[in-house]
Amino acid sequence: MLQLSKKVEYGLIALRHMAMNQRGQVFTAKEIAAKYDVPYELLAKVLQKLSKAGVITSTQGIHGGYALARKPNELQVSHIISIIEEEKPTIAECYAEGGEDCQIFNVCTIRKPLGKMQQNLNLLLENTTLEQIV
Image (tube, rainbow, N blue to C red; front, side, top):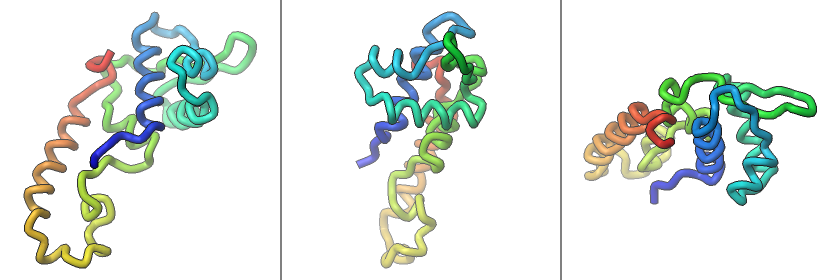
């Protein structure tokens, strides 16, 4: 079953939280984790990845935390997922790994229809921005 990982879910929850508030406002990982009852350690790791990729900024110190680095309408959900998971979501194993490991790749009767579904999924995620999920 196609499903977003908890890391992606928590990352999107945190980004949505930041997007719903005043631009430039800073939030700590602990604050967001407590508000949405998500594991702090996992959320902190996800926020670090997003910070390294330039999606959010990280401010150190007593009044430090995270803030969006870009406007919500400039952040594609596909890009966010790729940063957190380091790969794009796929509907079949052969689209994730290229088919070399699939024993029936050359005779598979559902590969082409699934390929069309994969293209539609890619387009949906590329055309959906953080602003649209706020």
